[in-house]
Image 1 (spheres, rainbow, N blue to C red):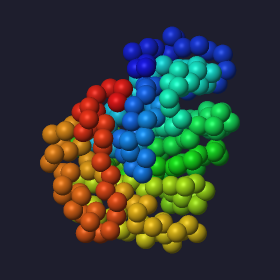
Image 2 (tube, rainbow, N blue to C red):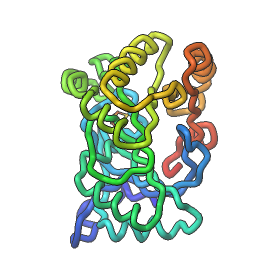
Image 3 (cartoon, helix red, strand yellow):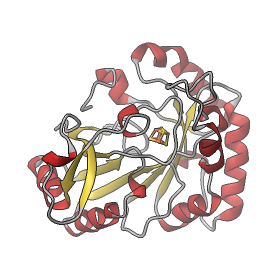
Image 4 (tube, protein in one colour):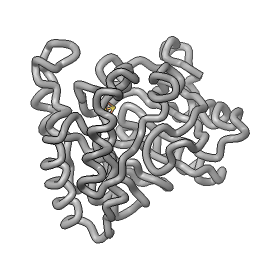
Length: 255
Ligand code: SF4
């Protein structure tokens, strides 16, 4: 259910609420669970501003409707075939109510994946933390800033890696580390971050827990990078992850 055309005042006001940009049923497009039918709950709002953000209307131009947790759970349950729920954004963990939603979904027996940029540690049950640390190539320099204002460059750069939060997520949850790759130069920084995370955690992070994902939100953009990133994965021993929702549906809303 796309809900991004509704305004705050359309939502119910009783009980805890979350700003929801989209809620829909699709296939998980990325990572270890690619291909698994899942309900996606996309919250609005993010503490970072990647220039290539593939959910622009949750970060640069956030739009949403406030939904109560009851409404969200009811909407999830409409999709009777789904036993996987993906809480995504934006950055869903900036909202304290996300923890309550995850607790409720856990009690109902859903498998939950949280897609996070790794800068916030939640206190909630999560079955798979899909952590996407942001590289310096994500920073919205003035020439890459989609708004052309350059106001987020420093804030994004200062906030994009929080090693305490990152290592805490890895130690607490089953996780995957998913890096958006814009080119071969990114691999140096990926390996530096991995070294730091491995030193900071007690968890054994295997190379198959590390996913390389080509940057691109259209089939044409992926066509330009897909094979190069697949070859980088083979060269370095990491896992390549597709973006099935782009390959199948060209990243149309609700997919
Ligand atoms: S962290 Fe994710 S949601 Fe936030 S700006 Fe970057 S890509 Fe977009």
